[in-house]
Length: 78
Image (cartoon, rainbow, N blue to C red):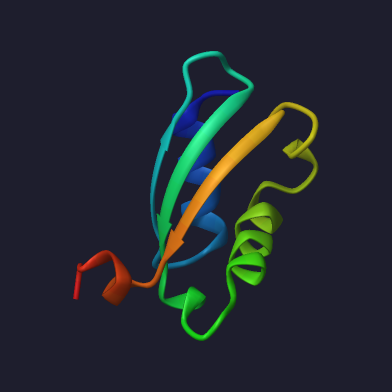
């Protein structure tokens, strides 16, 4: 698994989302995800939305994923 593939999966699974993913060892990653879908949701619900885009890869191919989840306003992109 690589950071670019994770970014693609997140952006495909959350239409309109923008993701930035890093991780050099192939199993531990960090991601910042900006999505309108996060509006009105608590952090745990936001993380679950992202995890859902990765499915069974979480805990398998992806050992750990540190997340920062923001709405466009929170990210300052609107």
